[in-house]
Length: 457
Image 1: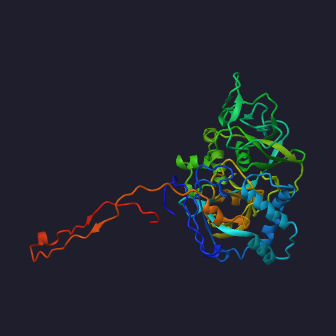
Image 2: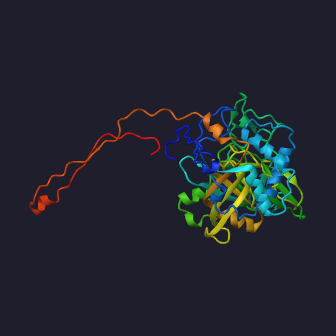
Image 3: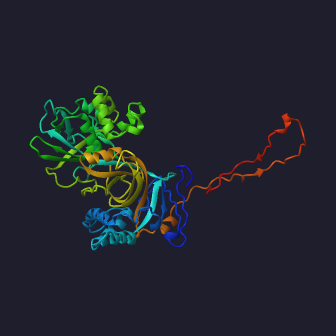
């Protein structure tokens, strides 16, 4: 699909059934509730056939179905849909049916997905692929009290951290899309201290410390991952999860190291960042400070059992859960097709797997952007830290959504101005006869008239 981001919609109608269709759908940048079911700005969608989804039939759909059922538990706890997005309402219907399904093998699970969903390729407007990263649950040692060995704090949410329009106790603290800061003497929301300020002591004396870690990099990694398992002095596992952040935008310290020629791009990973910071303790705080975002945590348990809970409110499933942009509805299945550095540092391992959207993050932005959850510990950390790769995304949309009908009611692009057609007049070639070598190689010229932009070219 061609065109600029200002283009609002381009739609090719279905011919017969979705299997015979070719639909490209670019969504308006401004959409009002109820306009259409696909309120995804700057997005293109193309229906596909199951047979054309590479690797679909070979996946373990039984494992994917188990992860999907964890999301469905929340849908089934709601008697009636409470979300005005049609995708949410349609997923609610599918989850009601899934409650009565007990597939005995991966083929039966695959039939459930094929019977209840349509595959739709999704990408940012004008792009063929999306982007993948990985995340995990760090396991680190820590202390309840500060001491020379453990001196780096992890903080709970400060009481003066506020967000515009946020009603405490009614919903989760917003992680993006809201004005976040603290109120001044005029009751205005002003910026909260950034990472440099907090690491410099802006929160000292407020008794906000949950625990203390050994290494500033460990604190940074935990904030990037959004959860952690801190093993205290007596062996107690303190489970922490994301609670809020200071309102400043997230920036990648890895990108900073690459741009400053401190780490080669091809070597970039979380371990490489750790090594660089350990070798450059005086410069490390300045690099960390380029990421002004700072994350606060809450305690979620005192056990080694189970996985951390994602933003949807269900435990994550290693190898099946993904974090996505909040433009998507939690519980939406996505089939990911990529070559990733799983078995080695080279991206040679085929990854073709049905994943379930169960989490989000402030750095996860875009319609085809996903963070793959790999589990806890060092092995998961090594895999997750290597992944920064392109991949193809197929979103599974419930069959309750009539894409053909939706397309009929979507606004079309603004009319293009009438500009004369391309006129190409081939110049007449005249036989000039035999001349000397200097004139024999004269260039023949074509006269080309004004060019008009033609839709579809």
